Image (cartoon, rainbow, N blue to C red):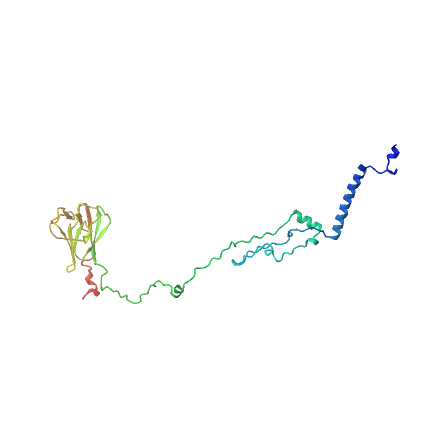
Length: 272
């Protein structure tokens, strides 16, 4: 009985004994096919998308004019990128591409760099020359001044506030009669907030260019009393430099500009 079951007795082998042979035959066929592909260096693959090798350089697309249509994916491919034919790719190259494919993607869009143009220059602006600042002129020889007319009423002295409201301020004295009061309409307005000074004609200060003297004349019709150097005059008083005039709660120092040493009439151009 045992001899009849041995192989080679003329009876067919069981089905379970032929399975290893079929597995070995399939492996052998696969190895033989792989060796044939390696020797030939070619592999046959089906239709594939355009896959670029890693070594190929991808250049950015150049911006096209606004009127030109957006480039398609086929037209945006760089001209120096050769397409590897699918029929001539080796098995090693196919395996390398399958592991790390590199596809070229191009997106058509507006360029990020904007051109900044200078403002256009109009013909009128180009024809008009730039206004040049006046240059300082050099005076050679003896300078000649022009003093034929006054820019304003000439100043002959000042009243300076040395006590009370408006401390440190001053008011100019002009030639002729000068009414002194709190109102702004007065020729010498002492308008610093002292309401004990009469609004109009509290007193008068007069400069006479004939004798080049200053006179202080109080207004006796006013109830408020004025003083010059703490003396209460009842008539005209000649003023000297740095005399102190008291009006209400304000003290004013007299500072002359014209006098015995100078007067506006001394200017040669003003003489007739």
